[in-house]
Length: 245
Image (cartoon, rainbow, N blue to C red; front, side, top):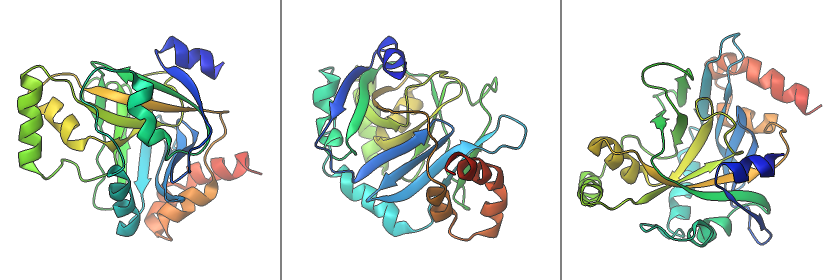
């Protein structure tokens, strides 16, 4: 079923057998975790408040965030329309073994959900202004700080180039208006698209697995004993614990 969904959305489906697992995404959309160096960096999910609000919590340990920046040095940055599987190979080598879908997603409809000072991001899907389309969760500073790099991408996009930022998500989107993806590379590219008003283009990688949520331990690790975050995530934690019993 999930393979058919992926193919209907334009993903090429492949089996990754030799990935080393230093970069992984687990769970299902609405209860997923991005892991870097085998430790959770971000957990996203529904708040379970009785409404449809969603949130993401990022670890406050800067060392984990720096480890993702180190991994980016292994990626080949794509800026031309070629085979998406070939473009994704440097990333696929970092992923845990399993089935994935890869596509070039052109003219994407997304909104960006940056983290606040407390390491959380909150949003409501289906809002008429501001949260149309897929929620993109940054894994680095947003907005990006290097103005020279940003200006260079702005010029390139205005000249007709369509550089690809890189998304990793826990499953193919069943509903583009209510799903989340992790922006693992291309923060300046995405910011440049937003500045020009041109819809962004992505190399989009989706894990294909059963719909089991991420581990409760992933959420505990990113909360790191913060009482306010524990209260905010209490319903999601109960859901994860119930599903993993």
